[in-house]
Image (cartoon, rainbow, N blue to C red; front, side, top):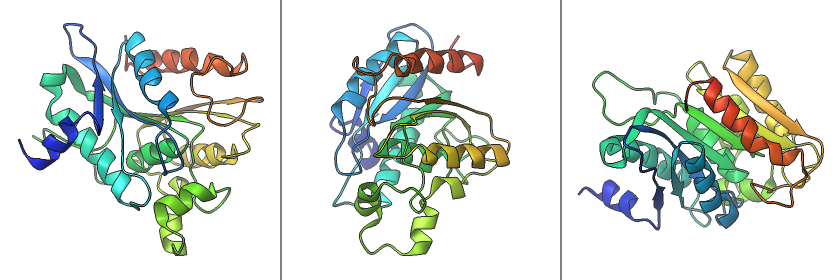
Length: 251
């Protein structure tokens, strides 16, 4: 087993939560949030179990965080997506229905990969890094406008120059290669302003990338699947499931 596969096979880094159905299932690599300083537990296993319940296998990625800086977390996610595709047969997943999902800073990480150019499948390639879709939950998007300062410092460092910050702002990275995206955010979010998602939506529209976005008036940052979320926010899982069916990721 090569070093990458040995690393990704370690459940301390990539934890599989697989469906047992006798068919090739769609799958999602889940990136919990935590401001690039930790991973929030409630955005990991509970989310993977929900994905299983609607017909997707899941892989929780415990990517590197501060003091490791960019590009360490992105390398981890890129490697994870390639690893899952390379071992699609063992995991019983469809390598052409593999997405990424992230919450808060994890949403930024998922979006970094989704907007990275040059990752599309090449002829005969067994493992490639471009996700087929992305699900972004109250994501950090911009490292310049409306930035979440903790995420910026923990990923880019305290002395990052403008070129790096611009390059890590996902609204600047959207291109024709970007896959379809589902976004949700609350307008009342004071930690990661809703303008982050609005900036991304504008860039997706400008580049004619299919996307769905749902904004909820009430609700604090970091709700995930928590029961205490306002009633309207608790509709996001069904909205996301409906979208996944609409775009033919799940049947």
